[in-house]
Image 1 (cartoon, one colour):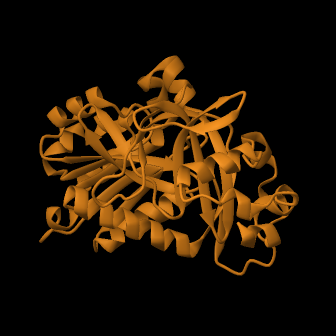
Image 2 (image 1 turned 30 degrees about the horizontal axis):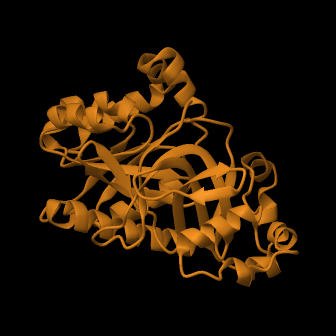
Length: 320
C-alpha cells in the first residue's frame, strides 16, 4: 500500500489524508480489513469500470496485460495483471490440485488432453499454463460470455446453446477426433460431454450453478471423473474449491488475495465470525494492482484448515 500510495494515481488521492500505519496497528487481519473499509477506501465497481488506468502504477516496468471481466452477470470491467502473477497463480492452482485432488497421480503414465471453454484473457493464459505444467496439450475454445447469466435465467440452457452454436460444433468435432481426458467448462455446458464420459478423468467447473445437487448429478453422469469446483474473478483468477458436506469452500491465494464476509451498520463495516454470511469484501494486493472492494455477492466465512492457513469462504451467491 505504501508503494501504491507513491505510484498509483487513484491511491495517491485516496491515501492523501490517511495514516496507513494506524490502519495496520493490529495483529488481527480481520481488524485491518475493517479499518481499511471504515476509512472509506473501498472502490466502487462503476468507478473502476470507467477509470481503470488510474489503478495502474506510474512507470511500472513489468510485463502487464489488461483483461476484461467475463461480463456474464454485469457490464464488463477491465483489470490488469503482471505476467509474473500468472506464474504464481498457476503454481498455487497446481499445488492445490495435486494435494487436494491427486492430479499428479491421476494422470501418471497418461498425457493430459484437455478441452477448456471460456472467455479470452486471463482465463486463457491461466488454463493454458496449468495444462502445460502437466505436460499436456489444450484445445481452448473461446466463447462470448457477455450477458450469458441473464439469458440463462430468462430463457434457459437452450437459448444459451443457440448463442454458443460455434462452440458446440467445434467441441463436438474435437471430442470425436481426440481422446479428451480433462474438461474445463461451465455447468450448463456439461451435457455436450456426456457421450464421452468414459474417457474423462477430471472435470473442472466454474461459473453458474455450482451446488450439491449439481455435483450429485454430474457424479452419476461422469462416474470416472474427479469433479473440481473453482471460483473465478477477473482481478485474481481462480481459487480451488472443496466440497464439505453440502457446502463448497474456497480459500484465497494468500498473500495476493484476502477475502472476508462483512456487514455494514451505522457503526461501519464489521468482519463476520466463522459460520456467518455477509457481503464479500476483498483485497487484491500485488505490485501492479491494489484493489479494495465490497461486492454484491454474499459468502459464508470458513476457518482455514490443512494447507490453507488463512480463512476461506463458502457458497458464494449472486443474484442475476
